[in-house]
Image 1: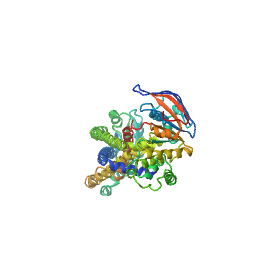
Image 2 (image 1 turned 45 degrees about the vertical axis):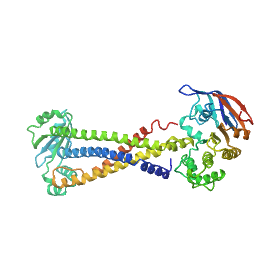
Image 3 (image 1 turned 180 degrees about the vertical axis):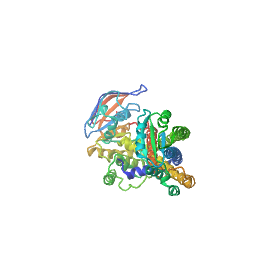
Length: 291
Length: 225
């Protein structure tokens, strides 16, 4: 492996030499990864909202207070006997409360003001086939201890339809930007190779391996895209602080993404940036470095 | 050390640069390749470096059959071969020391080896006092000495020189030849392509003459023509 000092020197001199193109590459990578991260955060936000409102199941059977556990067992058995039901889970008041507190952890006012006892216990029904909601309704009709049966699949469908358009749009723009970013990175690599063709010629003559010759150029591209990735991450954090934090105060009934959600996408963005840079680098020096 | 067996090289555009060439060079020999421009001298050198591949025939350098050498092993072949050119091929933004050190640096030699060998070889070529000069501060002869130092710093088995005196005046050329002779005497096989008649006649070493891609003369202690 080339020594670090050597790589560092070659990389920084490369960046100095074609600063403008490097800047274009960095800023395009930044925009691309920012949009990519944004679409990831949007999906995270949507899934939080879905979990809060539906608990990730298609049908919720809310039970009357107080809950009779024998009755719960017989209702569960009845539901499990249906072919269209995949799974039935009994969520007692404590579990409902825990879920609520987890989702709204950052909205203290809300958590403090809601009495856990006010949250109803329920049977969470996961459907094999959500279209067959009528069967669930029919089999539970007239059974004791049921407050309300809610079919959430229609709501889920609508939510998915709306967010899908939005996410696909953002992802599409991110993809186009990533492609232009990689073309720009490939271009900086190519310019670097051209500017240093004499050095490369000598390196080949004295027996430097291909990887030894390529490494500084790959590192240069990698460096550019990682700067873009770091900027994108900082920007996403800024967005979260500037827009989501005030919402946390004002819009209390929706769980919002927290810092941890932003942190979770950091490795994804860094890896995406690295992959783009390496692919761009390899494309940029294709046919340029044959022995 | 160098062996060409019935080697033919036809370029993609149809030009035949070498045809049915058979040459053997022993370890420690000093060989002139002479001939007019276009006689195949440069192709000869390029084949030995595996910059080009022979169309027919076998080439052995330092015990390796070049046709069977995979591309990722080519760099290791080249570490055994020093090369010197007419145009010196020095990097103008690096000092004399850095130019020579570059050759070791890019093949991954550690710093302590570089710090020991570079001043040593520059002393040998007579530039021990110009380590920190840049190439444009040196005369043509001095620049060629730097390039010879760079070619030899990794202690190659073979030194290939393509018209090393082509850009130099006669008296400087003689100095360069003395240096190449010195390199040869420490055991390096030297193979020099030239059309400098005076030098070949003065040295009285083995002469291989090429004409239109054929070996027309292979003479020990020969003269130019």
